[in-house]
Length: 164
Image (cartoon, rainbow, N blue to C red):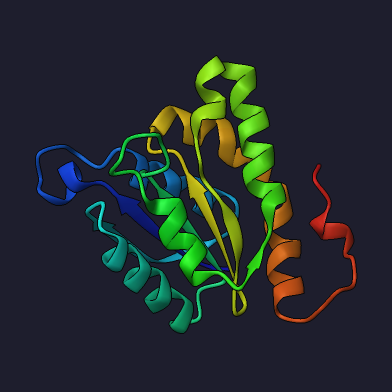
């Protein structure tokens, strides 16, 4: 499972803040069995987010996880850039993450992150906080092997895909 991590933050891209959520997301992906083949930081810029998502899809990444830019401020445009790249929605990931987030804080419903498929790549938007990644990644992790296998065209179910 080849994964890329894209941190969306103008402050981090300008080196005004440290990227805490990108490395946390990469570690969670690796723990789930992913090979992280790319990690980048971009500012809250629609064209740059869109470009990097297209780049990772073209590079053959199975999974792209973004962090940041999913809130309510005018600069939070990661969901819109992601929608411009995906061809098919896969809303269950984002919906489940919001539901899980709500268990931890009423603010869990404020993330506007989306999830969908571009080619044979699943893209999932995470909030930009390390704590939220700790809380939310575990709800996706058990599905990732099956997701990658089905995106590659294998619709059979395997015992090793089951959460346990």
